[in-house]
Image 1 (cartoon, rainbow, N blue to C red):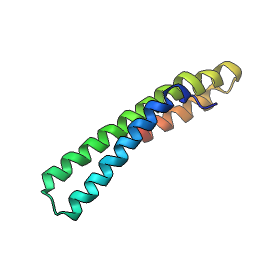
Image 2 (image 1 turned 45 degrees about the horizontal axis):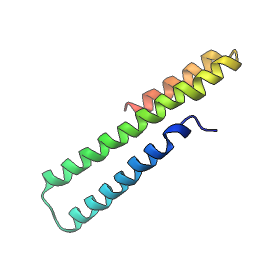
Image 3 (image 1 turned 180 degrees about the horizontal axis):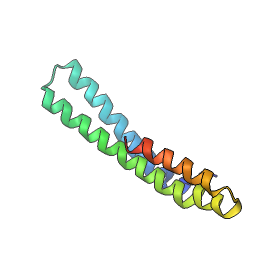
Image 4 (image 1 turned 135 degrees about the vertical axis):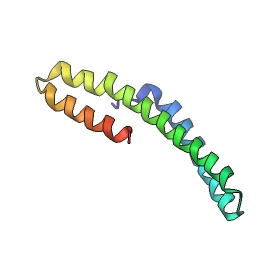
Length: 91
């Protein structure tokens, strides 16, 4: 069972909203809309994506990482994996 199961609906709602925003941006480009308006919408997508990443990361730490640390003595491996995930998410 994935650790994000409790937040699955919220994640899906956010992703669907992002999908709609992306389609809107595509239309804006097709319609030759003003650059600043397009950039503003792109900024919204970036912020929404970060929010989904934060939810997923929080759930991963509280679920997968915590469970792995409880049942296994390879804590360094899990910590290193977590650090890699955090580094990717914050780029």
